[in-house]
Amino acid sequence: MSNNHDLGKKGEKIAARYLQGVGYEILEKNWRFSRAEIDLIVKDGEVLVFVEVKTRTNVYYGRPEEFINERKRQLIEDAASQYMVKSGHEWEIRYDVISVLLKKDGVEEIEHFKDAWF
Image: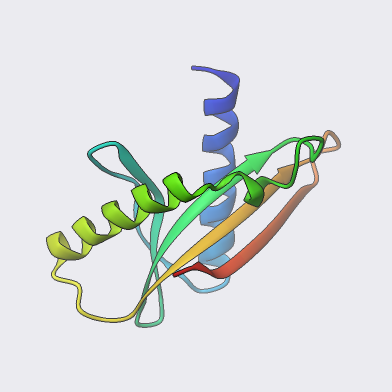
C-alpha cells in the first residue's frame, strides 16, 4: 500500500470515530459505485449524510478540504444517487466534508464542514 493510501485510511478512521462521538450512526465505509467511492455514509438523526474525508500531514499546498474538485463532487453525487436507489432512501440528504490534519507531534486537527455543497 502507498503512504497516501495509508494516510487516507487513517484519516477515515479518525473521522468515523469523531462522527460516532458526536452521535452519528455509521452506515457504510468506503461504499463504491462504478469509479466513485464515498468514504463514509452516516445518519445524523433522520438525515442521510455522504461524507468525504480529506487527510494531510501539512498545509504547504493547501488545507485538506481544498482538494475536493468539481469532478470529485460529481462522482460522489452519482454514487450517492445509486446508494439512495439501492437503499430505498426517501428522506433528507446532505454532503459533508471532514478535514483531518495529522501533525508530526501526533496531534489531530479535525474540521467538519456540514452541507459542504449541494
